[in-house]
Length: 235
Image (cartoon, rainbow, N blue to C red; front, side, top):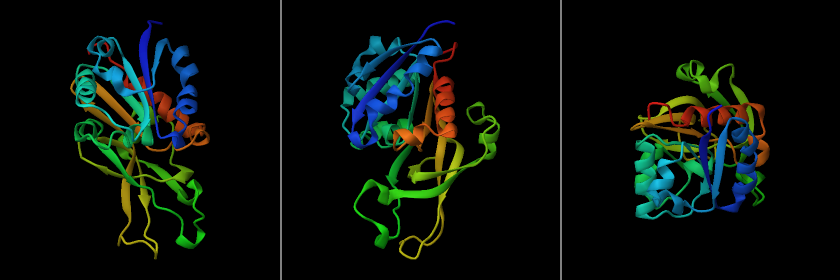
């Protein structure tokens, strides 16, 4: 198997366990012939030579900040063929200060609705809700989702602001409850891909904690998403 290069960029809010979460996928990457480099900040994105030599970026960097040079380097690398993949806040809630980053990814975390107010206890579990990830027609035909049916999770359900340049492979619908201010169900993308220049971007919104990443469906989708996003021979 020809060797490919994967760059893991991790850090930011510790609530998403960026080290433990990314370590979970190291064996998979190595088994599939990737040489893996790990960075603890987005500083590497400004290194044009390093980015040109990278076939896949796996990012787990919730919130945090990114400089202009770094985000421009990232955008240029993806446009030139470097793939980018990630899950949950590590890619869909990164670098809130950068509209250029948000445009690259195509979808941004807005909120995760909580339990009924009287059931909230002030912990992360307040935002754990049972919900269904539902495949779209496109998803049912896509190699990332091959053989996967609609499935249920009990974790944070991301409400995502997005544009129509993303190709949505799965969605999740937020219902209306008596304590909510919205007036009709809201459907958000749960898994999507995006073509950007010669590059590919893959995002899965499930993945708040390591146990969610270990769910058979979630883990399979992310593993396939990383392979799909990796630089193609023509890029």
